[in-house]
Length: 285
Image (cartoon, rainbow, N blue to C red):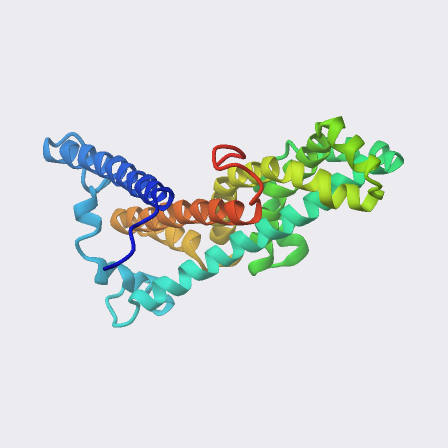
């Protein structure tokens, strides 16, 4: 006989099953409403094809993900492999830009907080550049870096960087003074104070900020792929729009939505494992 499941593990399993159930119900309800509107002829299937239409010919749709078949031809090729490669490159650009923006944003934000003359010198410039839409940086990125992966990564970087800089500086100021006093009484140096007290205190809020910027990162990387990269899911959307292929548009949108959902889930898992000292009902789980 197998050993009984501990009550705590059973409760965790129930919560996960319930979360999956609610997610399936939410997506299913959205799709059902879409299908009902199509059934009663409230939407034009040529412009807004319901899920059963843009999912019924997946092998034919996947051919457009092969670069040799993108002129609307029906040549052989494509398939799951081509879709996987396209998804991989777009996802890689997103997470590369997120990682660079997060790490450098925390470093710059902490530096501006502790080095007062540098804060006085650079913070006005940060506040000047922060409101500028990342999309407005696309021409600059192409002028500086040329056509390729770097403009897309740069746009994701810009999406995260300024927000993390400002958030880091503000979060350090909000660390409870009692934490700092206790650490100093115990003989902590300034370096130990930052790594052992301040950084663990601000990381939960910074991870929540990162998660909120994740969806913006997906938006800007698709725009960059349309103009400055020439490959990836954004390029597929652009090609589908130019050829008026609504089924391909909505299929690619479904793929992007699924990747965004999984990306957020992945960040939450990283957050739970890295921030092990944060209670499950805190820190933006």
